[in-house]
Image (cartoon, rainbow, N blue to C red):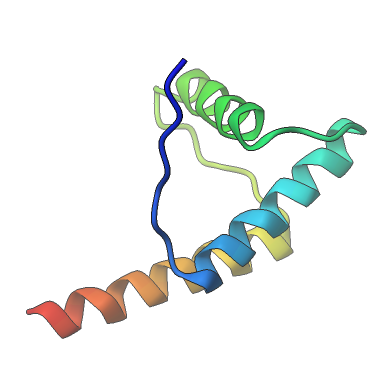
Length: 78
């Protein structure tokens, strides 16, 4: 197995860590980062028909903040 890394901003990593903790709390167990991303990808594969995602208010706020930051970054490069 080869190990790789992904460079992300500190803020992004903090948000991912928060989402991971929320997910771990729902599952009632700790996950490695690999397990966390596999679970997310597994959920996404189940939603291939583009169902509307059901997020908690906290998860929705995190996603909106990530979207805003992504748009800000995009605007700087245009």
